[in-house]
Image (tube, rainbow over all chains, first blue to last red; front, side):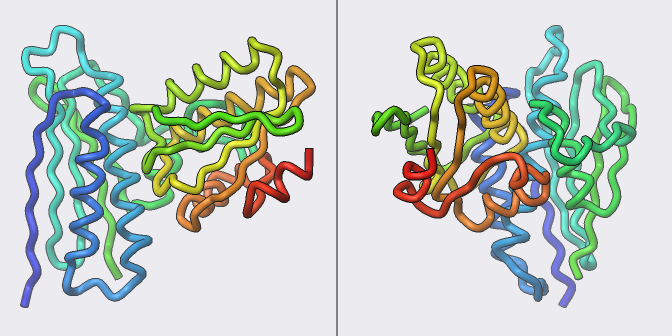
Length: 140
Length: 111
């Protein structure tokens, strides 16, 4: 049976909702019937990617945004996990940033590196009135 | 952010009583560490045993504390990491920056 899951989340663009979004991601990992790998590791990874991408969208949201919300979709279809995080701000293209140097003592910049380490494909596109960060991972 | 702070033989032990250390509460941790540095405390031990999840902001706050302690000729060390949290330090190579101990006893003895 094809296990097809679509989850659509919209929350105010405040960091207090990160925990809620992360927990939804963890529960998806624990629920998947077809996944044969380490479920708790996948749960952490989805939680982390959602947390990092949502934090970026919140930090770079436009102050004049008409609806100060973050919109996130999570889908699983035919072993592809696809997470989309929509922002309504001026945008912040994380898909072309360099990875931090090993043992760097910078306080920032690790979020992008973590997303790219975990996900197989990361793209950032302009949309009407905002941007979407799209991240895909093949669940082997 | 809930933190239990006690002082043991010149080392301030900070027990993070939160399940997550993320962009929502890492700024608060940074501020609490800064207060301690300003009071002249330069040796900190952070116990992460209750922390199940840490993101890049949480790691950044700990790096900030580490740099502040080092700049004052002190030290910031970590203990009680859960396995997934430890994996985050390994993935970002920060396990080579911080001294990480299993429990508080051996960590306190190392200062």
